[in-house]
Image (tube, rainbow, N blue to C red; front, side, top):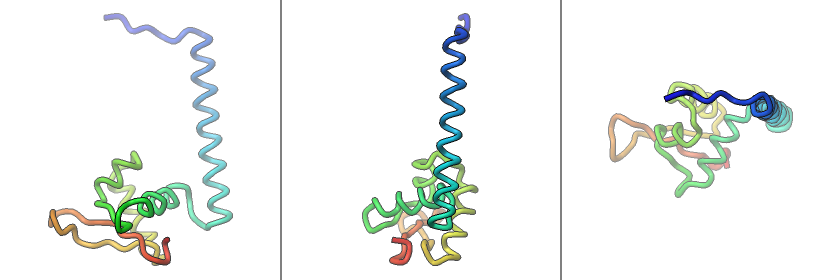
Length: 107
């Protein structure tokens, strides 16, 4: 099987898309940092938890939904936990896992 490379026009479109995506992410991150004192990832964690039943979600599922690694999520949740916005609980159905819970303050 031969790999088909992008044509020059497709390559320009791809690079423009990547540049625009990075610029948008950076702009959102900066705005959230200024207005809410938190990066986009932290806001995304809070938003995801706010939309789940009982405002709780298993950490593994949350990481998968956000398309981030579990260690990165663990670090972010620890920071949110320190600020009282999220708390962690043991997972009742899997003793190896934990659940992130959005606090009233985080809501």
